[in-house]
Length: 235
Image (cartoon, rainbow, N blue to C red; front, side, top):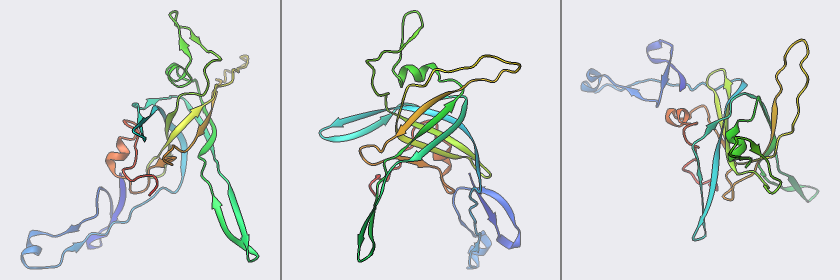
């Protein structure tokens, strides 16, 4: 997963690694020689492009003896990703004293924006938007259904080294608009847009993303289960 440059013995080459290490041959060890240092330089992405691999995982919030816990279903793919645009929500409030900004409080209220896809899959309409599939296989929308089911939204952007994978932990989606156009000389597929709100969970957790040194197991398993850091969100 991680890229580095091996500068040992003045020979430069790129390899893959899990952890930096010292190299010590048996003969060097026997004669008490110092270990040869293999130096690693981690290479990060310089650019990002191309939204892909959008998934959603239904979230369940449980309160037991006053303790809140969160669980997620296995992520399911939402094919046909076109674009995503999520703006940060929050306020910056300055406090003035001594003629200057003496203190500034900043709030993190998550993100909100749009996810544009080719066509919303039926499973998302029934499990998240709570439309009903009747005995005839017809999707039915009822005004009695309020907010969508909460879910985690996973996706990634390509990078020049590795793809950058994201997860937003506490999302809701509004009903998409109904729109299309007549066919002309060429066929231009229509798209559907979900308005996404990603609020902080009650424990403060908002999002996570892979970095330059994310371990291989966490990276490879990103879409198998929703990744939650073992470090509490408040730390």
